[in-house]
Image (cartoon, rainbow, N blue to C red; front, side, top):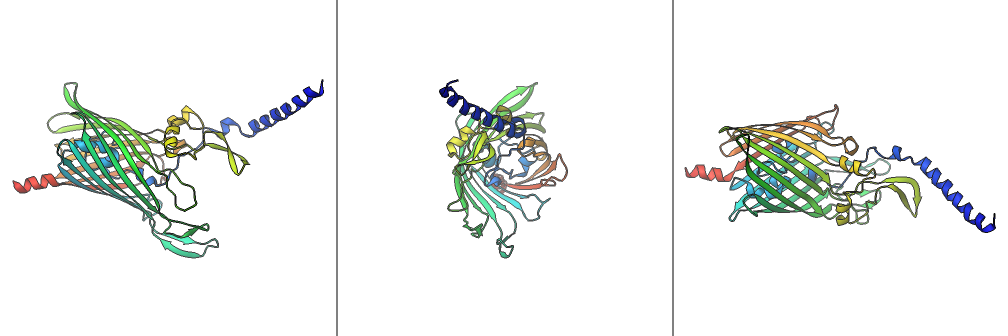
Length: 398
């Protein structure tokens, strides 16, 4: 064998040997198909804020429009029946773990002339009290971290059956109160985001019964990344795609039954699978794509960047379904189910809820029942109070 052939074959044998060692070290079946959750900053933005939707498995893209529609689908505001409405909701959160985390939500909606509507909401998430310590464990201070988001929305009917809506959002997340963390000066994270939504509603007939068919679409929290230090990395906020249908059956003069369903997918990059080796100060990606991309690229990349391919992409779709029964538009009963794949967080729970309307007031509550024991979401309660200004003015005139 010539020296030229020897000089060509020897490097090839070395490369093949290295490749076989890498394949043996990183077995695809062992690396893929495992827990691979998608994490973002400010996850409080996707917590169900009101008791009505909370009683229906956290589904609300196409449910009947109300004052809290700004969170689920701003386009629904154009179909709100009240001329003006106000709502307040409160949710003690993760009480199985800590006693002082809660979510408060205030919402407002008003109909305008020309089939238009506006809305606003304020979401405040308190994380309780945290004690900060230095590297040796000495206490350096205490702080009550909190996050809030303020929204304004506009919706308009584009036809008798279709409406479109947008919402603008300011986000503030102050988790450290300016304390030094690992030698880095911290700050409140801030971001701005927008929602783009559409809603379709049409009266149909099923089995000689009148019904309303609705379809809702909302792409929410499309906005800039957020950072808590001047030099630290920036994290995606929970950009989310929500799509779902609903059917509201008008059984008779006094009874109505609605069935709703939502499909949700986060439009942010899926974490890739890294190797143990480091090259140029960075870990090598074995499967998947780099998450260090722009917001626009991250949205489009999220539809095909799961390390385990299409199978894992389907696992990233959460399903929420529920029913709502009304008697004489005064008493309501609700039930639902939420499903998240075990590799993506494993949130699986049933919900129950009830509602009451009396004069100008509406009161709703919801209760969450996890499918597994010792779940941090166990015994979660939600409370909502709504007030119909238009109905109050009408009764005053009468």
